[in-house]
Image (cartoon, rainbow, N blue to C red; front, side):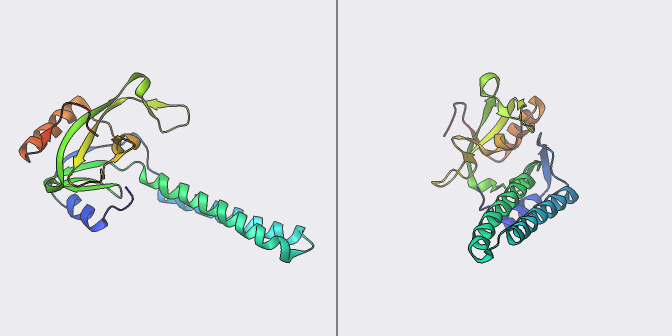
Length: 189
């Protein structure tokens, strides 16, 4: 999932855009992301200063505080990195399918596709803590042994709330037919 080639993604996105499907997540702005990194840095420095000033025997406790604060700082940065992946649209071009930093597949890499539905008890968690979303997303089966576009047996696109409208499904099916990608009607794994 995290090993998407930037070059491959740029090449696919550089092609003629045939369809764009927006994510229901909203992407963090650069200023918000920078603000979160600044807050994490201030918390890290405040923790180190607190550990330095409140302990008489600094040598024994400084190592503990350094490790603890570095771990918290690392977790905050990982959260910020993961949250920047959300909000990117799915872009289908004449060269393939891409979601920046997440999915990049040329037409020659795609074996088949199907539609995965998330309705009722099978809804996906929404962009906020207590919300859920329903919809239909694209499930790709790529050539090779590893399912690069699936996570836990489901389409990775559902995790990022990339759901298709009926019109977009119709347009996508037409594009897949033009490129000779077969449709699987059953749930594939």
